[in-house]
Image 1 (cartoon, rainbow, N blue to C red):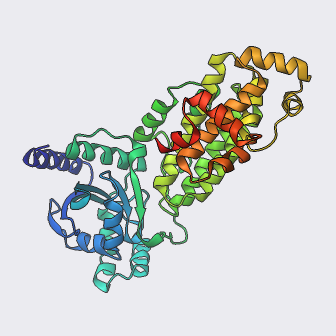
Image 2: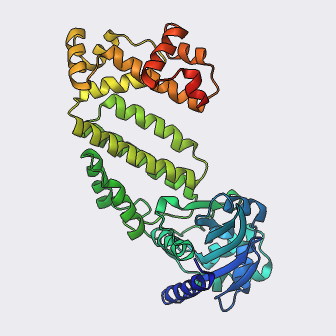
Image 3: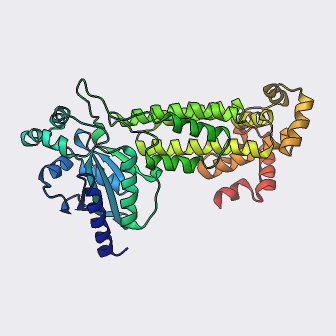
Length: 401
């Protein structure tokens, strides 16, 4: 996009936003040195942006991807950074800010500035800063980030493309007697709608999530320990979705084992970008699984048997085990499985083990014989023959290609 045209569009955007908020655009070079801004008195705000900032770590994060980065700086002040890369190197950064996503009293701000190591002059300006920095919902912040990214690059992104970065892991602490504004846990109506869509396998759930993210229907998040707050929200969402999926036809075995894996992933997430990706994936995963079950005509019992197989591929699986997991007699189970799934239990188990083997060949350095043994193939030659019949090449050639 032409630079002159981009500058004009950003200037117009700045004027329009300025009608509602004291929110400014800043233009920095690749070292985060300020080049220009539409802020009439940038001194104190520029000092606030630089306070405690670890430039090398921040630039490294910006260079990972040319996508908006929501940067929580000193005192919990939020800035939206838009990196522009040339050959993978950072050469320009646009910044929108400062802003807050919940109210901050002058006393809170002064305490937070002191903890961040601010000088006396900046601490004394806390009352005027607290009055001037706009408080904007997280959904509106995301909306602004998406808009500015489009003006800069012409690229249409969605809320889950946004990245998050917090200065030094520092969290904002509110003074006694203060509380964040807004509903930090979303709205009951939006929650009910999402659960209904999972239960019904409604694939428009993802569009609904995107819509809620930019209209504010998910509520407002507090900036105090944002990662932990979001993890709790995802845990609640995961619990509701797993129950709704069972009601929608997904077997308890499949739904609950899936939930267990996602619980571990969410708990291990180290930043909001990673957590957002996990949340989006689990939402899509649940609704697509329910949709597949409701569309395929496969009974809950057989879907549960398939889930059991998927979770025990590296163990011995007997027909007795599968029949017991569904409550059917072995003979009846075998006939019902073949009628609904289209192949015998033994053929299905072998097919899924070969798929797992193909994945291990692509993503690990495990030896072929080790993979065969781990997936319960009785011999290396039987594994190789079975693999060649399914994929048309030997395991060694598959890995090489």
